[in-house]
Length: 434
Image (tube, rainbow, N blue to C red; front, side, top):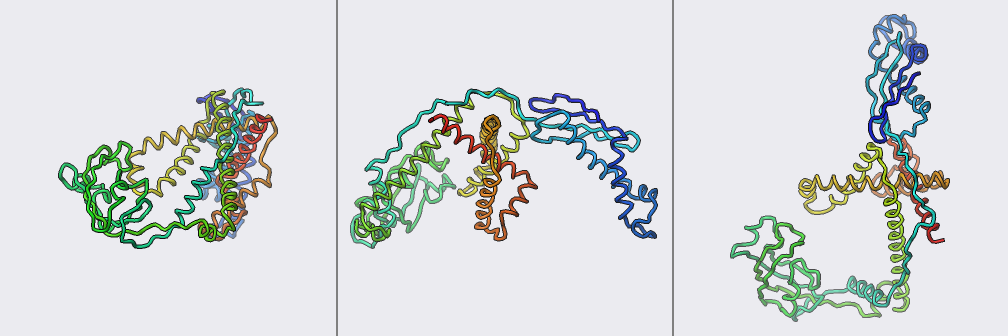
């Protein structure tokens, strides 16, 4: 077998592979033998049809099977012979085969980038103290109290935190807002709409006007929608609202005794202790994430090297699927995606490039420090993922089935790389703090 390397771009190589007839014949004879042994032809018992008849009858099928077998065998041998660190098979082209001359083909591959690792021992790292203040705990108590607030019909003015049922209409330059801006929806008018007299309100300034109103009261509200308003068509628009309160429900938040009883805790001191514990855990996670980002930024600034484009393209599709999955939960998702298609693709490509570059560097550090994902860690990740899929409707999903699926799609290597990268990042954090 002869192999000629041709550079086809950053991290991309074309291998021109020539295999002589003598080396190719064993595969050819094996496949022909299988056809002779198993082919069914009219007038012949299985395995009894003459070889010449088989060759004529199955000429096209034999040619395809032999080509496939030879490419599968010799592309691996060529990669091993050339000692290439291949990350993706990009293309197989220019295939020529005959029994007399053997096979030749061009294999296009993307290879791992070669680069010099920056100094990664004792990376400078800012470590912030994790602190939780009493006002933070107070706010969490208030959040909990609000979530357990009851509302009762009241013949009284609207107070902060109450619920109010309102009718309202809006105009802009004397015309109904809904006519001028057809997509304005509930911002234009509504009847019997319940709203919470608390910020943030869905109409700017609504809460200030509502407080003090009683059932039957009518007031006007002048609004200029901010430039960052959620509905793009209304940004900067001036509108005049007329609103009437139909009913009021007074907020009845639980006192301390009722609050601890509802959450099943013995005392406010115990509740505050648990809230402090939760806040400290959240703050610790946030600080660790900040430190990870600081380590990542350090590494990314220290190395700039070309990346295999097929890997970046695959990661871009992965990021894009994640983005679309998140956007798909929002109202008007289809319209948003159509309008921002190019921006979404650009953002996904940038994020993917950063991810691939960082993962490549973490992989190089892993090799230098002999860090890798163990089989037990991979199995644990598969078990957790299988449990998640089962909870989402795939009742027969098991770790074994998920492994089989991922082996077929190449996803198992991705799982191993993610585990490895996480271990390397932890190693870098521990090393920086030591």
